[in-house]
Length: 226
Length: 113
Image 1 (cartoon, chains in turn yellow, red):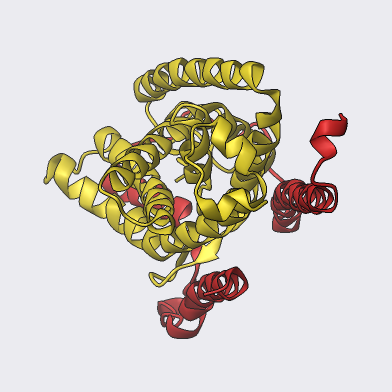
Image 2 (cartoon, one colour):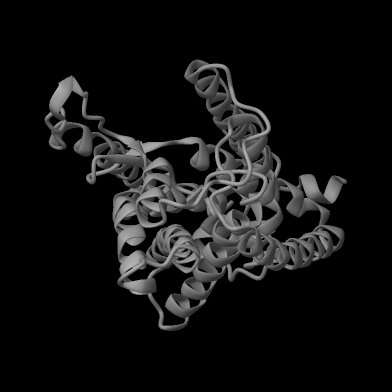
C-alpha cells in the first residue's frame, strides 16, 4: 500500500496530505481524551500500536506471486475507534519512508490516508454493523480486521487510478489494473490479518477485561472469571 | 473448543496461508537474452512499474532522502520494526498473565490497597 516517493503528482500529494493532517490531529485529540480519562488504557493503546508495528513489517508472499504486508490497524480501530489509528500509522509510515525508502515523504499523506484513515474507518464500521446484526464476537473481529486491511489496499489502488487514469480507458481501466496489483494480492493476507487479530483480541478479552469494559465493551460471564 | 486448540488452529492457518503460495506459485520462465524472471516482488514496486506503463512521460519529482546501502540493511530495519512491536506485545502478555495470577491468589488484594 506504499505509494513510492515522488510517484504522486504534487497537487495530489498536497491534497491527501491536507486530508490526513486533519485526521491525524483529530486522532491525537481522541487518544489524548481517552488516555486522560482512563490512564490504564495506555497499555492497550501500546498493544494496538505494537500490533501495527509487527504486522506492517511482515512482507508475506501471496498467491499472485508477489509480496505485500498486512496493516494491523483493525485491532486499534475496534478498541479505540476509527480515528485513533491515524497517528499510529503516521509513526509507522514515517519510519519506513525515512529509513527504508519504503513509501515516501511526498506520498506520506496519501499513505496515511489509506492505512490510517480509510482502513480503520472501514474496520470500525464493519465491526459495529456485524455486532448490530448479532454475529458471533470472533467473526465480527475477523471481518472487521480483514476488511480494514483490504480497504486500505483498495484505497491505494483508487488513489493511483485518480492520479494516473489510463490514456485510452480512463479511470476505470487504471483502477482495474491497480486493483489487480494490490487488492487481489492482499486477499490471503487480509485473511491472515483477520485470524491474527482474533488471536490477540481473545487474549485481550481474557486478560484485560477491565480495560475493555472501560472502553464500553460489554462483559459476558466468560470474562468475569478473571 | 478450548482456547488453546482455537489459538493453535489460528496460528496454523496463518502459517499455511503464507506457505501455500511458496509451494504453488511457479517461477515464470526467464525472458529472451537470459533475463531472470522475478517472483515474489513487492506489490509496491509492481505499482510503480504500472505507473510507468500507463504514463511513460511521468517522472517521479522527488527522490528518497535516504536509501539503505543494501537490502541487508533493509532487512535489519524491518526486523527491528517487528522486534519492537513483538517485544511490547510480549511484555503485555507477561504482565497481564502475571496480574491475573496474582489476583487469583489474593482475591481480596483490591481491598487491602
